[in-house]
Image (cartoon, rainbow, N blue to C red):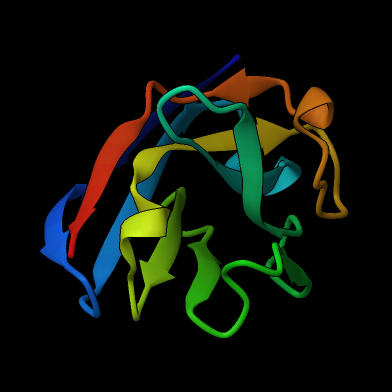
Length: 124
């Protein structure tokens, strides 16, 4: 069992930055690939970024590539999402998730554990 708690969301102006954190507890964090997803009001949950179990490989949705960076610190059991050049289209609830996999995963169905989410609102 893995428990995930996101933090770092908030209100930011367009063009600004935020750094999300996801703290994990429970089973060995380094056994899991990690991902970030987001869900805007009235829309489906979409993939944002993923990282392999030791952080050697990452993958991004086209919509965030070049603006967002996913990273992890296995000594702190934490995964991060650095978000730069934010736009109102990035407004959503952001979720982190853990997958029992060494390789990164981009399909939400491959993830076993989810956090409660943190709201990110970007004003124009």
